[in-house]
Length: 223
Image 1 (spheres, rainbow, N blue to C red):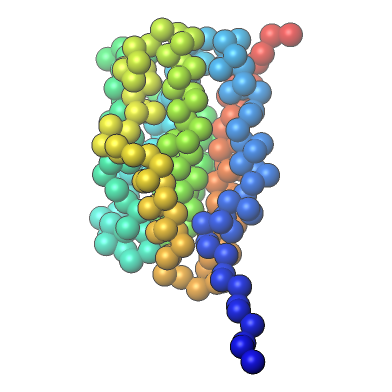
Image 2: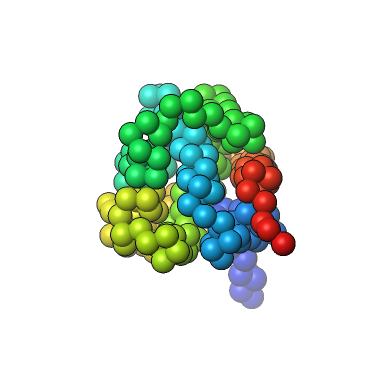
């Protein structure tokens, strides 16, 4: 008598997607972003949003040297993903050469960046959670923002103003995302740590949503 076939375990990347699905859906359509992409908010709102991204990505990319060699986080630190320099080009286009003078993050942005830095310093698997929620989102839904910004404000296609969304060194985003998910599936941690990573992914979505809420307060939609 043949032994019953066992069901293969659910890939870790699929567990993350399922656990964060509701939060992901909520994060895709905050009033601020809806208003921005519908043309109800102007370039100043887009610039302010881009400034907040700069603080977040500096936290993601200004990491301890040891993190690149870490067996958990190291494989995810890929130079083709780096966004800080592209954000600075966009901000120079939006705000001129003095764009960074007196620039301060929103309180929600400061909290978000601080949590990323804490994970990068003390908890590599937690850093992976933030890395995943940001960069895979940029390679997916971020492209909608780029296309809309080009049409709404007349930025050159994939040019200054939207370079943050252009991954010139990733020729095949779909293949890259598959490889990324395979890295998640092979994350060298136990099940308890994987649950902690899932919880941190949820926290990342919540932190990001708080930034949108504060931007919405700064740029309320007219009735």
